Every structure is written in structure tokens, then in C-alpha cells.
Length: 433
Figure 1 (cartoon, rainbow, N blue to C red):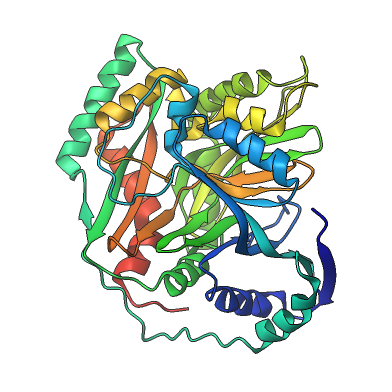
Figure 2 (cartoon, helix red, strand yellow):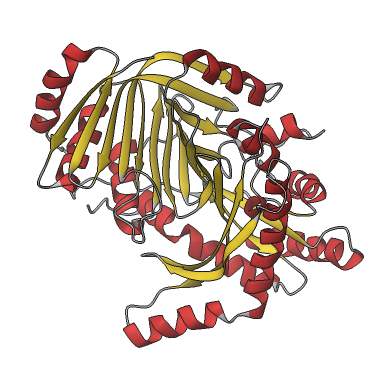
């Protein structure tokens, strides 16, 4: 599909970004992706906004990736949306029977009527209907942010797995590791609130301000919302090249510069954290090799420390070149779910995840992103994210950590609390942005 394109130069992209989000609220379906000016630059755009539905696809796991491939081939256009964790059931003989109060489709993508792309100080409009661009731009410039510091969420959050049960489950998972069933498993738990309401956009703005991650996302479709402050890339395709950047290894930040530098140094040299990361690097290398030109899989960065507002993270970068005969969606299917949120060996880890966790992951540890008309794409990992079903009045977030032979259950629990800190704050304290 041919879209009309216009470019608008601005002096303050951040100010316009807030107006963009405010303006987008009128649309039942929209998706905002924001790099938060994270440097080094990790993607093609600083921010993207897709609004309005020209066509859409939502699906359960059965044949979901094939359906997405057919939808993209038919539209030959931009698609924005998500892949839920439970699409694992489309690539393996698995099932999901844990509690699900969110009721998100397992796959959702839409072909937007209107797209805005930010690069530097230029907003690019890509519209199906050219005559709406100018009037929409004026509406965006006039949009008023009604966000105030007097807004509260004040939710009473409950843990689906209490600390004592968590310690017991991690101890049992360690027994599986000792028996050789697995080497590593990502074990997660949920905090939730029933019969409650939040202001999704204001809560996202607050969460994003606290975290400033490179892969933030705000998604609305009807009464379903995702508020994501993700620091992690799942998979990116640029031409024939694929990039994966799994995170394994977490340390807190300090307000004292010397202490903060020491925390980063200690993370980079922590044998346990490096071991976790390297195991997942090996898994990702294996997954990428299924669609790669032989010999093209490369580890470009191994266990590098990246610093974000809330935490230091250990990240590796693995690349490959797509072999002729495979599409980008083939590469997604053969690498999903991402290794950082499953474990090794991957299939057995996912079986144990289903057995030991008590909540269906839904969109948590899935991916949100976009595909271009040419078939390039970029997807985050849905972590550090709040999921909200306004119809069910159900709010949820999950956090987890990698369990390996060197794990101490008490320390793993503390790591989960560290990852939950920003989400817990915006749901139980005044919104302050």
C-alpha cells in the first residue's frame, strides 16, 4: 500500500511526544514505542506512534505465525502489535492452563491508518488519507496534557506467590538442575489487583519517567492496555541481518557515583551472572542458526554492562544473516519465546515454567513491536510492564529471575523485588511526572 508522507521539523521532540500520546488517546487502538533517547542508539527511530485500524488480525496460538505471515504478505504495509508468551504452544507441543485474568489475544497486529515516526528533530507522517495529515498535526500541537501531580493509583497489590512459597519452588527447581533436567530456568511470579481502576496513560508516563528504558511501549486496544518500561530487545531485522540482545544479570543503582560504578563493575565480573548470560547466548545462537546462512551467527558483545535509571543490566548482542528461503517471520517463529525468558534446554524449561508458575504469562515475556512494508522489524521483550484489563478491572505485573545451579533462593527473591520497584511505585504511590 502506498502511503502519503509528510515531514515536520520541531525544536522539542520530547514536548511533542507528550502531545502525541495525549492526542492518541481518542483512538480505540494505538501503540506508542519510545527509545527515550537512549544512547548508544539502538534502533531506526527515536519513537513511533501508530493509531487507528485499517485492518487487523488477532489469533490464538494455533497457526498464529503462519497467519501473521499471510497478513503481512496481503497488506504489504506497516504492522504494529504483539506476540504473547503463549505462542510457545504454536511452536512446541505445549499448553497453558494457569490462571488468566487478563484475556488478551495471544497474537494481535493492526495495519494503522496513521503512523508518526520520530528521527532526531523530525516527525514523519505516513497516512493512508493524505488530507488528514495537516489537520492532525495542528490537533497534536494543540493537545493539552492533563497530567497532574495530584493523581493517585493507591492500589492494594497482592502476590500470587508469597515469599515462602517462592523459596520452596526455587528450591525444587534447583533439584531439577542438580538432576540434569535443565541448566537454567526463568521463574516468574505475579503481583495483581482485582476490582480496581487506574489511569493507564498517566501511569505509563510516570513509569516511563522513572525508568527511561530504550524499548518502552504503551498499547491500547479497547479496554486492554500494556504499559511497558522494557530495557530489552528481543529481535530486530534490518535487511538480511538479525540482532538479538538478551539480558541476564541485574544489579541496583546508587546515587553515589563511586558506589554506582562499583556496582556496575561487580556485575560485569560476577561469575554467576556471567554464567547465566552465557547460557542464554548459546541458546540464542542455536535458535538463530535455524534460519541463518551457515557461519554467519556471531556474538558481537558478550556480557556487556548497560546502565538504566533503575538498574544495571548485563547484555549480550548476537547477530546472524538470514538464509535465502526464510522470511523474517520464520526467524521470529524459530526463536520464540526468547531464551532470556525461558531457559536451557528451552523446551524442558518451558514445561517446568508451566508446572511451577501459578499465573498465565499472557503478554508478559512476549514481545511488542512493528514490521515494515519491506519485512524489517524490531521487537522488545515485555518485561518491567504493567498489563491492565479495564473491563475486568484487573491490573497485573510479573517479574522473574534466572535460576541456575549457583542460585540462592533468598537472593533471587530480592532480585525480583528490585525489578518490581518502579512498577510497584507507580501503582501504589502518587503519580509524580
